[in-house]
Length: 456
Image 1 (cartoon, rainbow, N blue to C red):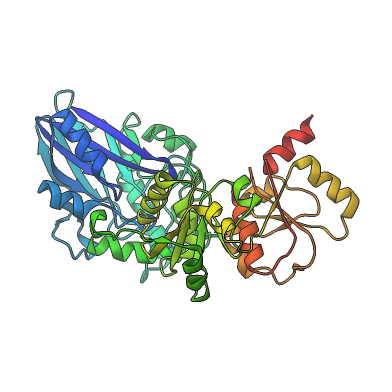
Image 2 (cartoon, one colour):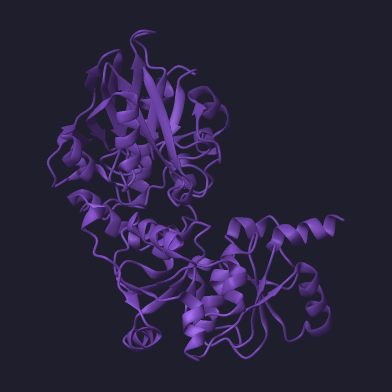
């Protein structure tokens, strides 16, 4: 039997292909489906089954396009209210092909329609060797219970407890666990960077499974829930109906600088996808900077949403195409064009530019010593990171809520921003400039460099 995990690092998303006797099933596909089609062809497999463990909130699935291309059937939990052609899954449903047996079990909690997939290789044993847990059980965590529009987090957490303890934790310790997300995903709070585990290991080490009672579990999961990104609800609805094929996206127009200026005046936003250093050296005023080399699409979804007209600025055509694809993976499709010749073309027209100083930890220390009374030091990490250590005198302004929490900062004072390594802080500097801050600095290396420096 063939079994493969496909891990999309930029979204911390795992999908799966399982094959036997020339037939394949794909579980939780990403929006761009070419990799599954190519892999199936290389393995001599026909994709006949597409399984969604739930209606995903943090990315747009390619289930509908994959089914249309291959003729596969789509399976989704019966409670999903899906409006595309599908087979509604009830507890205990079976899919068999060759030596592969997939048993689908209902595991509500993260969402009401969540299912998990027990995988057995009948040539080895009729008992499952693995379970694909979707967002029900992660490595080191469980799915957040606050994504329903009509169920309270407490109600969903109670359902999740029952799903875990009555179903998943009754499996043998040796059964391998393969979730839909890894570390960095917004669908949990402390998901491990590992991509697989076992039921036994999670039983012993997963913090959420240590709760002594159902009530303790509910309290643990619903206390201090991080803010739910607004685009999550939109992605759920896109997935409920099934997204249009990527091939239907229109060709992006090349925009001359004068056209960009006109669109900016109408409310469009330039999304600068270059590196922190390049953005700092020169950028279009009022740009939002989200570097392509990080969790670009997730941050774009959180900070910009799906309803803003975006103008892309990229290093070259290849990275422009990558930028657009990654935005489409989270449902951002309102791209009105791209800046012709990038910053070089903008500068040639003699149009104004802005800058962000890139400072080292050593330079930040000097600024604190010389001008500590005026300097504002802003930490844009998550509260949990802040609790593990911070720079003395800094103020916590998590990036997810930064623009709504600037009332106690002075836009006229010098402001140095740091995060873990410099990626999020560069995003933050662009948001601060848009809010009228005139002297902002990005701390390269971030708190990791600060900690290393202070260990020397």
